[in-house]
Length: 139
Image 1 (cartoon, rainbow, N blue to C red):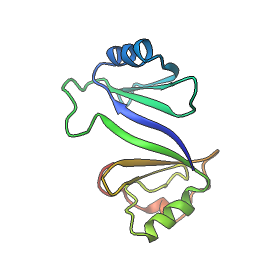
Image 2: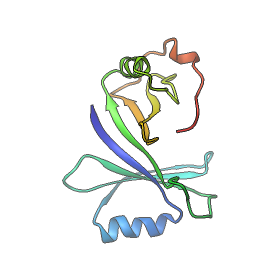
Image 3: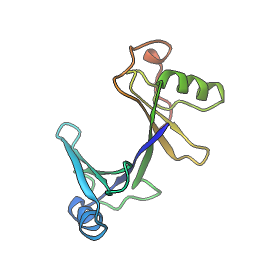
């Protein structure tokens, strides 16, 4: 398993970029603006690490984030998303967002930290029981 990124929700993207890029020296690696979802993702990293910080700016959110909503999730790349989700489920871990697409799933740590699991490489072929499994809770 390889650690990929941590996601932080930010109220003011320009202010966040000033802090992380200008003050801390991280570099913007890529940016994705999603008009339909009304959000922007900006991925940053330092020169000496492959791990990134994903800044998520929800365009219409104007109040301060509370109760940890500014921290989104940790993300890990996995060799086989179905195998790891089966192992976790057998151990009693709730799969909050099942890997219906063969690519992405969400679980939570015992301390309610949201964890994103991403399939290494291309998505695996869609398969049951995952493809028809509903979301559970929030992540």
